[in-house]
Image (cartoon, rainbow, N blue to C red):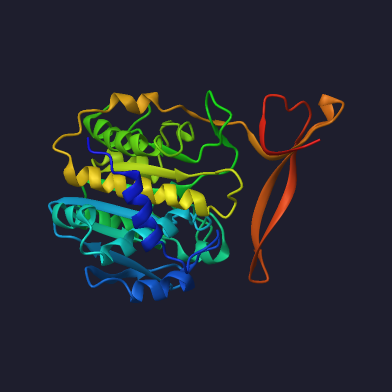
Length: 346
């Protein structure tokens, strides 16, 4: 298992970070000009249109036998993966980088940036018809769900990367740290059986975790593998398409998720490079050494002389008059001694 050099990655990221993308509200108007100017090593096409008739693009990279499908923003208000994906795509302009050249030679990637452009514009989890695409893998009521499944069936990938954001409520079990990046190898059925496909998925996660532990130790969590019958990752895994979930979370003082974006980039490039170079996917047991996510954080806790009067707040984002605004909302009152806070007020 070859783990990429962090110093080399840091230099690559600094040179290829897409500086036009910033903050949490990323929608189609932000990525459209970036798609138009992508490297000639990337083939672009429109695979269809959203419920509100916004184009959804497919970006094809490489010519190798190992096939990888990546998509972002199936939840419109989860944009960190989209930023990290364009940072990753920019790397293919560098023809002298051995990591990138290995990926180009060994892999064929299809990337779908922003599967849910309508939800991205509205800054909502759901699409224009109020459908959660991540719970629509079976019914496929949404046009966006149909498009993703069409690409899956026609491309027949060996691995999929499903890029999400998770809320600031998650911490890493056994620590006082927020879960900055969390991973999941989805279950295929209710017993959470360790199938060969899940083991292979876990192996890729082991490689990504090994890299991230070198730069953000004890900030990486493992998302619950409870089986969700209608979820995308669970169903793709069940169909035989190894599916890796990367959940970008919170890092101290990083509410724009610009620091986490870099770690998301690191995870993505390490995961793809591992698939490009791996001769087998046997090493999976260290996956279970990754601590569980736990819901134990508030954004702000107000302490009180009377512990029963403590107050826990979370930030809530929404678009108003074409601007993203953030409000601090009270979520819980009482003794909060079992919770942690990103900011504590006395």
